[in-house]
Image (tube, rainbow, N blue to C red; front, side):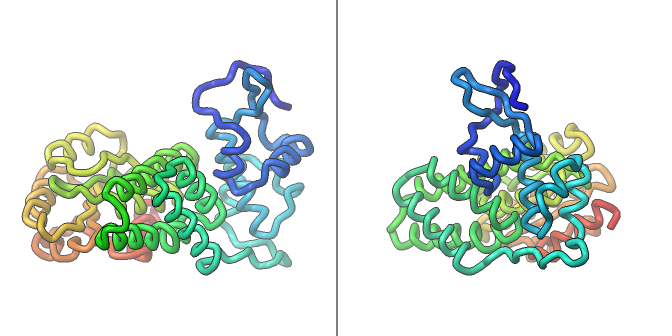
Length: 314
């Protein structure tokens, strides 16, 4: 039953929870009343307020139901049981889970997000990205929405149809989503990755999308932002608990020599056993110049999946 406690910080109203989970407000209320799947707090005027744990639980239930299971069969499961369930194959006899649509659904999301960017409507952009992530899942969201959206925004900026401020607004929305994802995905950790970009590298969209995929896979992510000196990266990696990987986004050819020096310093000073992951357009060329056994090039989803599997022992 809903509680009457004083509302705690980091709580969200029903409309926002609906956008972030892909569930309608009526369905969320029905699941609360009939199955008690979450117990929202009440605000000063009696409005439902949900915690990040509530949102994470509802997202797991939504994924279980979308895979063909009835809510009555999964409502009583614990968080860990739900995580195991959604990671497994559908039960015998169940319909195949709906495939994340990379056609009309993704195209429509890109069009709506572009319209929000054009109108400088950050609230609308955040809402659109959140609901699309919930509907498509992280992998399709990154591949079919974020990558396309970033490309379109970049193309329009080069043609003078969008400003640098609008491009930065999109990156800001992705950054906000990353921090929210880290809060939602509190499943058992399969490793801890520190992500950043080297000095002079100010493009962070690619590293943010990687962070989304890592977080969805259950990997703990510490994001330092972009343009960070090598010494500061080493210091953060040593001081953060259980960091096993330092990942760098490398996109600028003009900044290649500075990036090489940064990666060389990381290879020299990071503790033994800590891996270095390089992603982005310049990653392969830089890795080839350094030839270190602990440097891995993440040049696609399959390479990322392989490294995540290694973090979790397969």
